[in-house]
Amino acid sequence: MKVPAFLFAVTAMVGSSLAQDWPRYLGPDGNARVDGKISTDWASKKPVELWKKQLGAGCTSFAIVDGKAVVMGNDGGKDTVWCLEAKTGDVIWKYEYEEELQPKLYAGGPNATPTIDGDVVYTLSKTGNLFCLSMADGKPVWHKHYQSDFGGTAPSWGYSASPIVRGSVLYCLPCAKDEAVYVLNAKTGEVESKFGGKTKPGYAAPVFFDYQGTPAMAGFYGRELVGYNLKTGKELFEFTWRTSYDINASNPQYLDGNMFLASGYGMGYAVIDVTKSKAEVLHKEEDTRMIFQNSILIDGDILGVFGDKNIDAELIRMDLKSGKIHWRESMPGTRGSSLMVGDTLVILSEKGDIIVGNPAKSGWKEQGRVTPLSGLCWAPVAYSDGMIFARSNKGEAVCLKVD
Image (cartoon, rainbow, N blue to C red):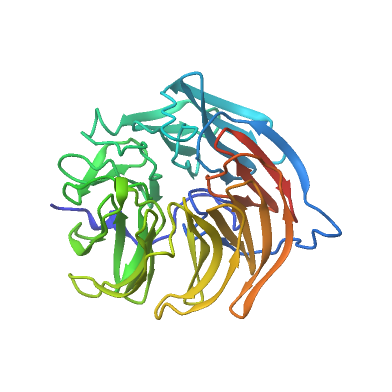
């Protein structure tokens, strides 16, 4: 496979994003972190609810750029892509297309968070409808379908791995019969290259990192974690990770030759040495699980809300290299998403609580808690320009002002 080297420059996602925009799944750099500071004295000054809105069912989070928030939902056999005024919730435009709800053991609806890049936004449905829409008016720029155009195979709960822009190309995981990873021209949708071989699809978005001076990508598929050299498309390492129902959904983390990965259904977490083609387990624990919630890498530690269907949620800070648990704190429900604004951690519990605090290495200090949502809340929490964005699986969305 001949892959143009310019496609794989190790640059941040191109776009007009400001420092506190949130243009994609897990924020500007895909690490659930932005600089800044938010008000946390909620005992004397609670967050202001700017708006609340019904979006339709789904687990997509928000992408927010230049005061516009894009999110998705499903109602009446149609997916709707909403572009909202971030501060008011007013509809700027919406784009609809036919798509089944598919409420398999949950509310259903789209799972993949949109990706905004400059004057367009990329959205993905459960069956594989990939749209490039104009941010100005929502009109389609181009459309591809993971199954009919690429020969992809959707996982049991539908495609969930957000397409990610890097430079001039869009990385997608259709997990087709020939190759797992498709690299598309971001402007036209045409296939520029593909690699990865045949594999069972997972639910995690691709993760990009520097591997011993080489631009690399990790795909967390249904039955394994695989790392690729982005200059050549060749495999760097592979590690078998078989989870019930092939549900591998949480974001892996890379640090100094080691990778952290976690799942639910009894798998727990593992940290593996990936400096050689055959990965080696450094430490693992089956009861410390992340079924789909995200982790954050902070000063060599893994931070996140761990839990599973039958395991109560705990906020844990753990040394990635050694596995030492610095501390653990009980959280509502059995799972939750998180992000950091400066030194402040923001948590959305699956029960609709938004919690803020300081997750220092010495211990957790909760500073505020409100409960603006009800029902299950599995979509990742998002943040932009002094506002927290959250939604429930059934489609209730809220924006809180916290600056």
